Length: 193
Image (cartoon, rainbow, N blue to C red):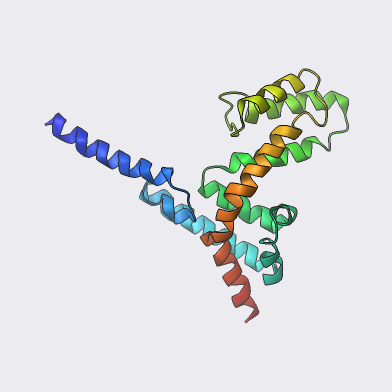
């Protein structure tokens, strides 16, 4: 009897894992692998985010400008919030969190705080098996490790650049096609009608 259950279970697992091997255009692509209750909670949470953003006097023009460039999106606080919500649906918010941590790190003026902040960022995002490890190549990881011997405001520049490029080329185009962004645009347009 157990032998009959194993192939069925493997087939189901392959189906679930198959969803992960394809690029996602929206959070709905993951519904096959997530349990029912979290799906409803996730969809409800994303709807709340869209409603919140559209109610914050976000104009259609502002939201439309996010499609002009990735940097325009990152420079707008509501754009950043919408992109963060999108990355959470793709389970890749660590990329944005790392990029933001680096931006904050560059504003550090105290030499005493610099080394401690650098160590925290390295341990959280760069180190192998870090809790929120970002996807960077071995050479960049090793260069950053060497930079940690004498931390400076630029010690994460190469890693931050790689993560920025990854988000810009990979996540950003999917965000622009995502249900989160299209719903947000629709809601801002409806509000003006």
